[in-house]
Image (cartoon, rainbow, N blue to C red):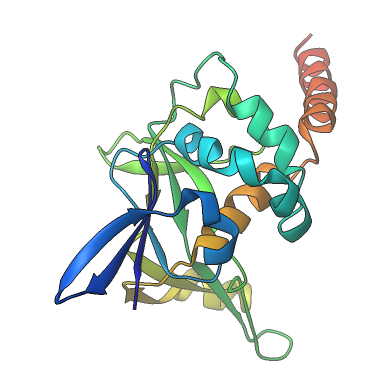
Length: 210
């Protein structure tokens, strides 16, 4: 099995040839590897990933959609950084709903969020879909090393046992990574629609304070 890694140097493939791993840059064939398991090299930023996607936007806007062109364009521009966020994370968070019929959700794509300091010295999750992409594109993107399954049964069950189990070493394909990123970024629509929504919300909050 080939090993695939997203990095600032490109989309790197390691292939076993002549009793050794041979590394090659397959960035120019990125759409062909969407269903391959993929890792992200340490230090790789969202902007690095967007640069790799640029030559393939005609394909990705069909396969992934979610206004990839608009988000990539915004993410490659300079912007005011969101200083409260330290890095970006993709993780699998499944939800086991046995409240009204057994159902497992959250397994179609990983969740994408910002991670910032909390008062206890660890990290807490930040929503990022309301932010301009160039406020976070300089940040490193990491893959979480375990999968969480939450309970979304009755209120009593959720309080008593909020996390059903944690499973180590989940797999991510290149397609999972890209789909998860753009799904979360596009929660409010394309950049212009997002800004319109949040401009209205900030105005409403300011009016409430007066």
